[in-house]
Length: 236
Image (cartoon, rainbow, N blue to C red):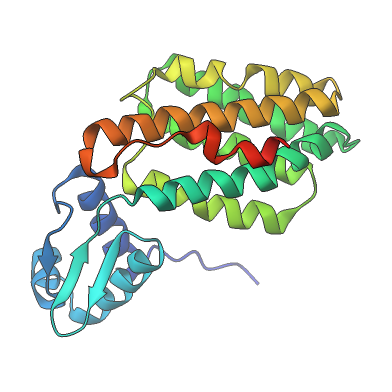
């Protein structure tokens, strides 16, 4: 029986349109909106708007305030830090495991994601580079054979992407982002488990430091944070 291909639903379209509006600043952080006003703006009924905002709330992009409406939330620094802490806990040992993998298919997938990452960086496309970065890390986790970790961390990285907060191009170039993964890729492909773990730890810590410093400068209310001290226990 042939498979029927269906296009995106109204809810999916509304979710993506609202996400884009939040990322671009068209719906600025802190702004409050009613479901009816958003529905009128997008030309859809309140039902897909309610479903879309529920998904955006799950991703941390909006907060639903009963009897008031939907508020676009600002980036929460503590959530970013906790996300990087989670990544260090999970991705470092799984990078070690990925390097020990004998799965040739997973190895070729990782190489393909790395080549796509290179292409995005060379094209100097910021959003494409960040997504290629995410896809490369996902391939590492899949190579380690832990699909649950891949699912959990994919969502965490999507939250960063969807919030519009990233180090590229604000604090480093697309090429610099790609180059920061070179030692990780080489160690995994060489089967160097200790080198892969060390490279993953260095990379995540470097990205966390750059991103937190970037957001702290933009948002003085965040105060000063010593990221390396915060994550020091993970090196013990």
